[in-house]
Image (cartoon, rainbow, N blue to C red; front, side, top):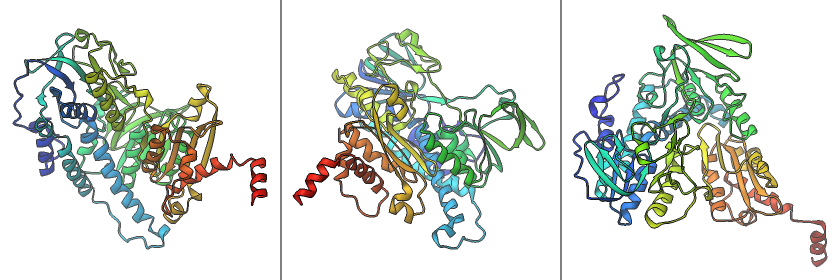
Length: 504
């Protein structure tokens, strides 16, 4: 976004200006295109940026086109700003719960919300250096700002210039989906694209949607002082998650003071002098909430418009996005797609994995498949909910026999000493083997713990081997070793035990 298009809701800070100089320099001049490119990348989010960078590192002639900001939603209006304010909100929660740790609750706790947001902008500016336009240009990538449109199956036009390519990658991401609720557009609403522009914490906040975004920001803003209501049309948050993990999260949100309305739908929004009035329906029960702001977190829509995809021979669906095979190729085998524009699971680290596949498959005729990777994901609430691989129900649907080993965090000494003993580690193995096929962790540091299991799955390391790993004591990672030890206990049959006793 150019400098003159900064949000009019607040005054630009020095951090805003410095960040924009990294992600969309005001004085940037598009270069003259090369005769032909090995790879043209459309979109400079995590997938596009890393693909362009890694392709240039191996000697490819690369161009990248971005119409807005480098870093995409993740760095600008997603992961980085949200996790920054989540950390501050957790600090406030810990201060209010100091007596749980044998300390006195500080008197007169008050939230300096402008300072919270200023810290977020400072962090975002610092991180933006790693996804800057200048970094790619210094690596030898031709950087273009503007709207990319295909001019046939082997060329892209941007700002009147033609970029011919041997291979191309579409990584244009997605934008927030807005429900068709009568009156919501006139009343005004927030999404992840503008909520981080706030300098004043909403006194009353309604969150529509119980996915990762809705849960994370509902909890964060509640801890920062908002009176939060959550409305979810399903009977539980995180609809695809393990039910016991979702239940733990639901209880945690309620303890924080969030009013939760499950199996409910907003059917109308209007404005009067007291705020935004939202009519809701739950089965046959109708009720009304009055709030100051509405945050919409009901999913996203892939950015597939304005690119002339038909001219490139690229098939797509306006809801599901660009259609790809397991090698991330589109219906035009010269053109690949990665990230939120084509992925069902919209997480930046999946984009990182996809970028590596694209470089290998597009430039070196590789045959790497996305489905072969065990890619974890995490919802950064408190406690966090992390998962990798198959869920129990998915394994059963594929006729894979499953044995599950579960360790409650209340049995993990470090979790108890930290007063973080809500949750569990649950590891699924293929029955009769120690092959890990999936895991779910609900714990304060689930996003860190799941990485060890992801490593084991990608390296084909079985649960038996994890039992032989020495862990520092006490750590919360001991939960994984306890689950592995539980697996070993299943191998100790009576005959083996009798022989062992005779030997001893």
